[in-house]
Image (cartoon, rainbow, N blue to C red; front, top):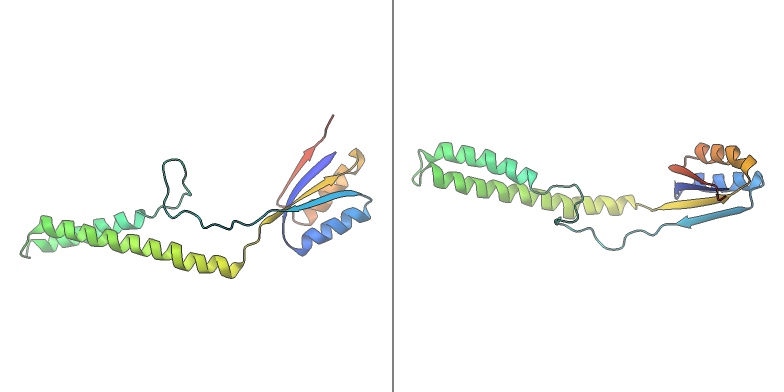
Length: 152
């Protein structure tokens, strides 16, 4: 029987391996996943989206600033329509610039400071009667997920 578990790089992984070896489990394989080396794409396309919208704040600010600019435009020289369009452009530029700054500069620095490590996949080969103990050890040592495979 094979049991698969995912861990983060931590002492809990080492403790789980040591405890499994004490239980008499001989075949243990730990595979670290590699971190991404390339940056994520800034803009989404039709076939791939990361769920982060860079246009939502731009649209909200365009609406708000164009509304105020159009209202004030009745008293200004070019009129409410032109000032509404100018306000929408300014609002979009401010909102998009803010999102761009947050995503490129600030979030990148936070990711670098955290030093995000990838996960480790732990593969344990054991006998059927050891299954309950192995799963208990992996859960006690904070495994992210556990899966079983029994080749027959």
